[in-house]
Image (cartoon, rainbow, N blue to C red; front, side):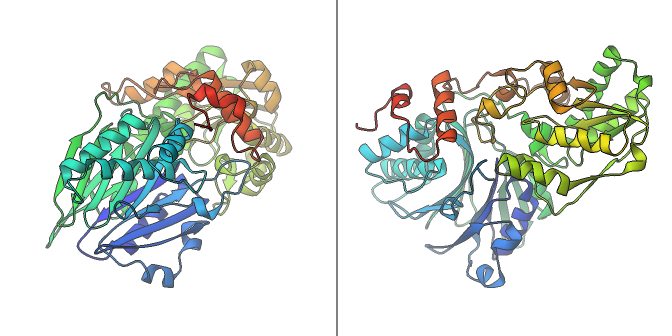
Length: 504
């Protein structure tokens, strides 16, 4: 999960890019970067840390130009990623090109080998975003008219990217001397929205991972970028759009609605807030069927993303809603923090229980999801220490049983508390007296009820079905091996399962 933004304007964009990244900070806290275009020259600054910590006044002054892109990155669990992998990425041939990417390629190793052998391109980091940048650069070179580009050539290049790249990718890129381009994978797994604003000089355009960034910058939401579509804005502000994929199927990541996105965003026509309210509605109906809700004294959310679901759940159960945990807003989101020990320690730093709301009560605690179980276990223990008589835990999402390979940091089954465990075993593991999970069907209905035409989702981490159709057990084994052995560049015994050999 990352956040991306791209802006074309008739005035300097450095401050707008910075402010936009602040609005997308929840999508990544590990690194931030901005690249601007001034004529045919790029200026770029990036580094590890929060947006407010990466950029200083002198850095902002060094980013001139009326067009540019920005990125916030979340960390790879278990490691402190190098600042070399902060985005945007830059390549100078055949055109100056900068790119920011949200998602994850599932065939990046194969592409890396192809780029080295066939395209004579060298990849300098472990980031699949650099791989995607070089694939785009090669396709631009292959489709250019001599040395020049036009929208037709650019769209042909994006079509070439779709033919070669597999997985999830929402991207913004700047081509030196030509303009700004945004595109989305043929399944639309990761979000990307288009906004515009009228000025005296003409229309200005903005692309962002979430609509909240558009609204915060005063841009009117126009629409979502369609799966497989590319949108190009040239240096004069002319906008061109074209479908570049032969086959598309909108299948947004449902975990965006469960947890990742801000509740005030609208994604692919669905309000994230309303979807979470619906999740609380369906979860309440389930609890009513399975237990006597009169036994529950109080319903409490784990702030912040579970609040809409918890409030609706309490209302439908007719049980008082209380804020039993106070959040320290200066601690990052524990789900995207590297390392189990860091996550466990940060829970106590992030949340504090109000004892009067727990003492002698049966409390129903609602969270958006249970991933590794570390946070849930600590929260149950905190409730007991605060004097709760019984602790019932409810998840607005189903059990996370499978790795996510499309840009969310859940790559190994060993780290998922629900993998290989029954609900009763999970309940015992987190120390609760009872545990309720949302069903997969109700989770999907929570979104599709709000937009019946939206029928397909990437729900791979819940049901083990990968919409791109290329994720094999061997691929998942390779991911787990690499995670457990980061010192090994590539497990040679697993290379052939990906269809290539490093010696080719």
